[in-house]
Image (cartoon, rainbow, N blue to C red; front, side, top):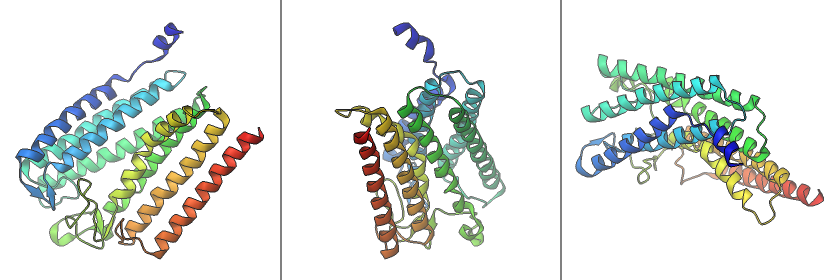
Amino acid sequence: MTTVVLRTVRWHRPLLVLTAAMAGLALVAAAGLVIDDRVLVGAPIWAKPFKFAVSFAAYALTLAWMLTVLPRRSRLGEWAGTVIVAVSFVEIAIITAQTVRGHRSHFNDTNALDSRLWAIMGASIMALFVAHLVIAVVVLRQRITDRVAAYAIRAGLLLSLLGLVVAWPMVMPGQATPAEAISGAHAVGVPDGGPGLPLLGWSTTGGDLRIGHFVGMHGLQAMPLLALLLARRTRPDAAANARLIVVAGFAYAGLTLLVTGQALRGQPLLSPDLLTLAALAVLVAATVLGVRVALRAQRLG
């Protein structure tokens, strides 16, 4: 048994290198938060490199693990993983360099250099999206024997794709402020850099498109973690757990769309109106019903 495990587990080394590099950068950025008192767009200047480093580390490590679960080695999937590593290094290098310079990294067209760097970042993000989509297709096409793990991994990959998609409104024309040479924004209804939640920085006075992006992207980790928790149930049932993963995936997607719609209407996360609360109530009710149906099917089986 041990021999089989050792033979089948083959970690994607470039993704592990990215994980280690981002962990190191997170430590550097954390030190920057302490010793560098500069502020950019209403936040400590090293907050963005810190958040991106932590996010990239979690993203890369999760993808590396997912590729080990595949029953057959996929050269296409590994190639896509390497592309993700390359473009992630490009993006984080620009973010860090702009931080050192004291300039915005995102949406910045104030001069030729800033505009060129932002264009490179935009191209990198598109390349990452395509590579992530390739990995999702590879995983969907392979038959993973552990049904619960298969559902969790596929749901996580699709949810993180949704998280990338809901970030696109940040660069839509309606988010631009030409007078300041800024070609997009996180906030809706208020300027970027206003009052925000601690650490996360999400606007407390208007909508914030980073929320849906954050929620969706971290579905990549949430679904496998849920599968792990379900496996620890007193009387685990693979079929029921798989159904619960499906219910959770739809609920998570609904939540991602809900907070994105709330942001697009210029509404702070912690100040929902009746429409948002009604939509949330429907989502919760549908999720509870789905869970009950999944568990009832287990008892009937």
